[in-house]
Picture (cartoon, one colour):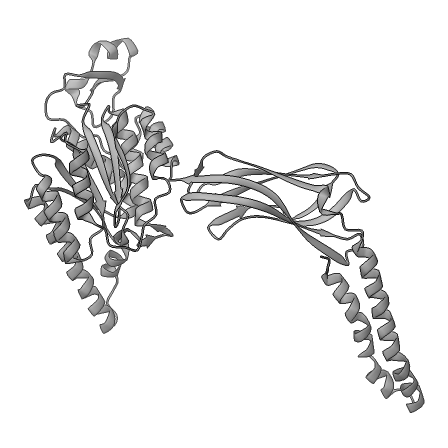
Length: 451
């Protein structure tokens, strides 16, 4: 169907605008001139509008047909959440009467997608027209770009038609895999301190030699290899491997406690990114890693495995997990864990605690694992509450809010202390600081040989 453009509407209003000049003219003219001009004006406006409408119909036939267009889209195979990936869109135009077509183009983006530097106004030529832009998707999961929309204008620009070109692309948006790449790069250069990751000192057992590397300020002098130092004319130290072939099982809460958002991302997003980063570190250490995601029921289970390629399996199993507004069933999750895991493991539960009932369940279930497994509770902190405590109380209402926030923080401290009294390792961290904190705690556990 052909639609009028703003240019055509402006032309239709032009005779009406000219008629508005009649009162000023009438002021300086005699009555007979005004009367005759009024009788002539209305038929003239109608005639001009009819001619413009006829011109609109004729000009509409110059719009290219739908069959002249074809669209093809090329995207990356793997998308990382929040990262701007390149997209190439090819619009093929078959030969026709008009070889230069003025168009307005849009891609099939949803509200969670951000199209960057897309040239909407295009002059399409006969043949292949390539468009390159960037697409950022801010939520994990599966997405489909089904169509490309183009608006074609007529030769005189009075009419337009909108075409929907089939151009299906399946996109899988994975968690922040760039963090894993950054860790691997900094690990090769021994610059993990830039990520806030500290090397844990091991208590004895430095017998498993791993490699030689340059001396760092916090290295022990007894680890200096003097022969290698003399050859390289630079301080060289020996590094040793930690215990390998240990098992880590992540229990990832996907219930209502993890739906809270910080800077546009849910607690589950931060937790999943940290889990995948720590899984990469543990697999490189030679450990076995598994994952159990649950909410009202068991959502995903990946049995513990090892090897450099096992990280890909974890990513593919967990990339589309979403936090649900339902109560997490800890009973069902721990029963399932008891049936699938018999070997002593580091059981890392990542969740959030905001009420007494959930804290009591976590204490009971993790406390029951002590002895057979090594229970480890990771609790997400809420920046809004801690930021509230740092504000200056200028009103009575704010003072009451700060008192409630302080009471909540004190209650959380008591929960952490109670978990520790029952043999449960605990870690409390802000969502955006969870990566480094979780890796540091894992390295400390390995160094102390708790597992």
